[in-house]
Length: 77
View 1: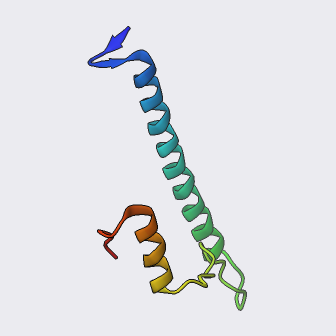
View 2: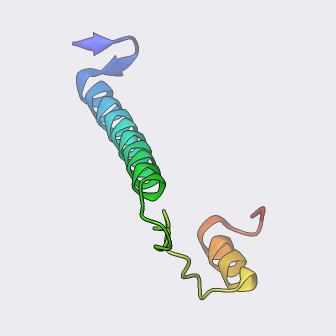
């Protein structure tokens, strides 16, 4: 069976990647909304729960170096 110019196996693999991408997007939206609701309903003088950890021990130079190793010299910041 072929779907357009793709074989069934190629189409299935493509749809699997697409569904994984959708699942990740929906999970991120769920986490953002849940975090916003918790922070909106928190008690006075309690800490805000951050969405992401603020730990980033790497400098910009190190990050650019890693990108260059992965993608080559034509890496944009």
